[in-house]
Figure 1 (cartoon, one colour):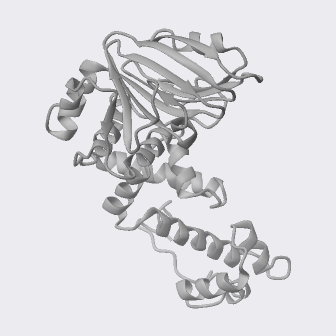
Figure 2 (cartoon, helix red, strand yellow):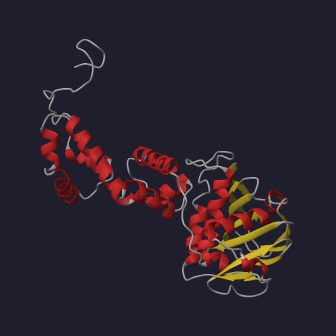
Figure 3 (cartoon, one colour):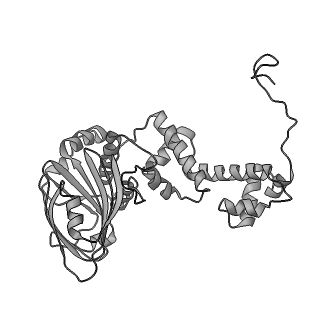
Length: 330
């Protein structure tokens, strides 16, 4: 699996990067400094990338043999001309096997694109949706979607892409080539309107939970759920499914409770003569101290100032198993 983020000031360098999957020409059609950047992730069967052009560019040519392509443009991406026409509302651009592309991108164009081996796409779609992807035979350039699904598709696919410029580095939640392809195909199928069940083993759920927990702690709980999904390379729906099915709690509520638990432990271990409640609250991202104190009392039955003043009970017995004098005995 390869992934990274790269920038170009040469349109030919940008074109050459995707020469194996696109046979296209790029022409700058407005004045200005041409700058592009790409975030990408690639496996042997699937390539996903988000691209952006600072100036207006015309892209024309064709898709390579044996591939299917799906696009989820941003609002700025929709603003151009698609095959000589305006973007047709809640639709998803797609193509297969040498399909022609002719796109006039405006300044600030931004688009997310998924390319998948057609045979692999058909097989994966059949397994996740329970039927053949009949829309591939339509011969058109767009697939109708349910309201709001294009934005959701874009967010889900972008969640798998790296945010840093360290090319070759995988996101925090590594997955196999098959899992990566399946996640992209399932997102496409849901956007079209298929009822797709999320498939995740207990070990995968637990691994995702532990990785999410570690990232949240490292950020001092300042990372958002959306940011967490992007870092992990999963959709918000998958993260919520893992938490609900494994812990029967939403990710947002879990991390809220975890943040209070960390604050409780720090207050209990701190010296009240050297530390304050405000210090720990601000460190963990609580800015409204009055509201923080009220919620803290609701969770723990006492105010944070009371926790800071009391000492841990060191006289409590320590329970263990083993004969006296052994490593496991009291």
